[in-house]
Amino acid sequence: MTNETWGQVRESLMQRVGKNNYTTWIEPLRLNRLTNGVAHFEVPTSFFGDWVQRNYADHIRSQLVNAGAEVHRIEFAVASAAPKSAPVKSAAAAAAPAAAPARPARARAGQDEELPGAPLDARFTFDSFVVGKPNELAHAAARRVAEGGPVTFNPLFLYGGVGLGKTHLMHAIAHELQLRRPDLRVLYLSAEQFMYRFIQALRDKQVMDFKQLFRSVDVLMVDDVQFIAGKDSTQEEFFHTFNALVDQNKQIVISADRAPGEIKDLEDRIRSRLQCGLVVDLHPTDYELRLGILQQKVEAYRAQYKGLQITPGVLEFLAHRITTNVRVLEGALTRLFAFASLVGREITLDLAQDCLADILRASDRKLTIEEIQRKVAEHYNIRLADMIGPKRLRTIARPRQVAMYLAKQLTARSLPEIGRRFGGRDHTTIMHGVRKIEELMAMDSQLSDDLQLLKRMLQG
Ligand SMILES: Nc1ncnc2c1ncn2[C@@H]1O[C@H](COP(=O)(O)OP(=O)(O)OP(=O)(O)O)[C@@H](O)[C@H]1O
Image 1 (cartoon, rainbow, N blue to C red):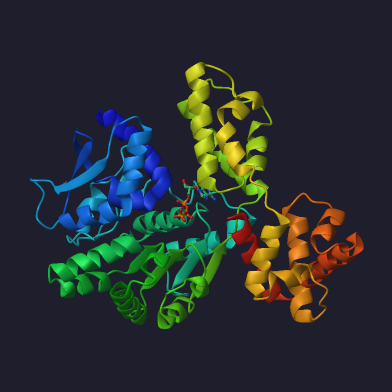
Image 2 (image 1 turned 135 degrees about the vertical axis):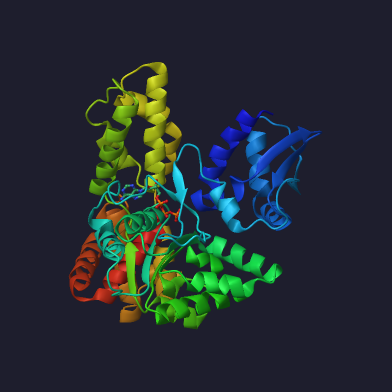
């Protein structure tokens, strides 16, 4: 196997494990050799090797096999030239991907000490972030923090499903702060990196240094905080760091894939602290936002692929069909441009359908009414059988109407078809249920929050 193959495998690993995990754990790996079905990798520290072995070795092996390499086992050994205990900074900083220009978040204004942050992706700025209804509040809050003025809400807690722009917004805040307030010490890292640093500090008996470092920043941004749930000592340390910074009136920005109240195994005191500031939701994208993002990306591609034509309607088609997340949407466009330029053809609807058949098929997954009923029943803690049963008690009838409403909104089923799946009810009953929920939603914010959450879970 060549290093080129490993390069390709790394690309697919990034898709599988997510960008943050990739940057922290995969990028620093160096393929040494492949002999007798064993792939040998160099790692910066033995802790690093253990971690990757436990969490990512299976992924790595299966991607290597997919790329045609004969690999039965993976081994990790500490690189001989590497220092005995490499700080996480070296893992993250060494990881700056060649294709995505990145620069590490550093201490500024005459402070020599480098902060142990993850690299910032130079592409993730406010300029390149497309704002639409689903993300306008998150964007406005991020902008406010990026002004670097007095702290008005602490923390800013951004949450939303996969690939909806949380990391992008956090990097944008960091970039903007570095421009506007170079005097501030801004630290961005993932919760996983926070834990890694902390464990390393424990092992090297440098916990005081760790505490001091984290308490000396002006703006702390921690991505994917759900990662620390269930990790007791890391949670404890995070809690203390958090409190110390809030007490000093330093800004904290947190992101997660769900709201603080929904993160399982998170200590109550942390949960309630996280809820103290501004909690903002990045909603799933709508058609207009997806189209806006595609149009912006196409502009960037035009410079790269000069002369490549794209027929009207292709972007609308993609925005309509690929609804999963922005990362998939971007991936589709990248593939389309690369393919069209290789074969020297215009990007037409036919070409898009051919070249993106797998992505389009995957996005086509149809939500069933049964799935909706099950999720709604779970959410309201009622029995699934009551969804189709005759009970008229409000505690059961209301969730049933919520499920009817979602079935109408999220599937292409007609009212009579929906009625059949709700125990043979008449279509007028379904219509009444849908209208009732529409009316209530306007007055009842709890109900409208419930609906947002259910939609996100069902479409996620
Ligand atoms: N509104 C937007 N405008 C432009 N690009 C966007 C927007 N939202 C997301 N993206 C792009 O989509 C990709 C995924 O976004 P990002 O990594 O910020 O997602 P995330 O919410 O942090 O996901 P994860 O939960 O996987 O960490 C990035 O390339 C980002 O630039």
